[in-house]
Amino acid sequence: MACSAISLSIGTIVALVAVACLAIAFGTDNWYEIRVNRTSIRRKLDGNEEATNEFEEDIRYFNRDEGLFRICFPNNKPQNAKTFLSPVLTECININYYIPDNEISDTFSETRWERLHMARAVIGLYISGLFCIFMSFFTGVAGCWKRSYRNVVATGLLEMFASLLVAAAMGLWHGVHYYDYQKLKDQMAYFSWPEVLKQPGVTEFYYGWSYLLSWIGVGLNLIASILLLCGAQCLRHEKKKEKSKYMHYLMPVYPDKRQLYGYGYGYPGPYYQYGYGY
Image 1: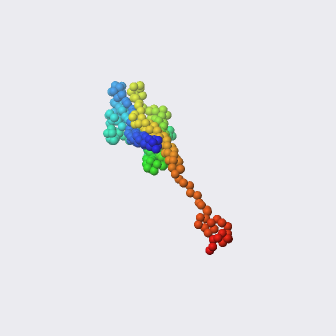
Image 2: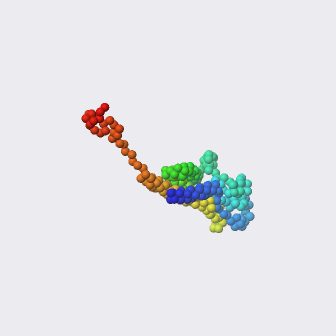
Image 3: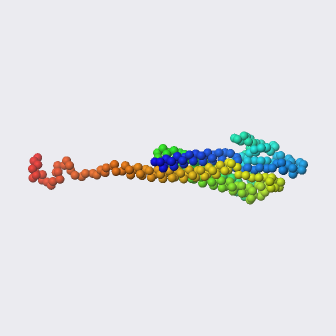
């Protein structure tokens, strides 16, 4: 009893912490942080009016935090940019996934389309992983309430499958960044950035806390699935032990074919020869 109770209790707590980490990471925007040294760039403009206008209006010249859905500006925001307040009260713009397609997406190259499909798949896989976690709560409650081995195993497998889905989403997210900074050569990629932004010390890139929180959620969810599966094995062993413990109290009942109240009492007839007068 102690083995299953401890394993299931710890697994449930770890699963709750994991889903909290994954949900917070999914909804926040600090996945990839880009920091631009605007002071250094301003000194290099040398009064160039065209470059100054670009410096004030192009988002590439501003500090920004990129998430799965939004690009947010923690400090200054570009002029004439149509921004909105995020849940954490920062100025943001939405990331365009071109759903449905429009005249801009019609001009995309095959490589750009590959990048776009991967970006869409990141969202789809992440949502699928959260859905599996949501379904595992129902099987987990049923398993703990009924002490059902099969329900607990289903919960552990759903948690493990959710971890694999979110991990696949994270891998595709890295693939999207590889396309942006290494493979794509169009006007929307790093290749077309102004040279002043590519100079050492001007633009710096960091993985944000949302990204780290997502990986922590994946790891905790995997640990929770292992604990739940171990708890299921303990539960199965305890049920077998409990059944064998009370087995010796059960008395076997066999059918008695003897005629206790029959007329012949087991003697061959005729019966009058034995003195039983009728």
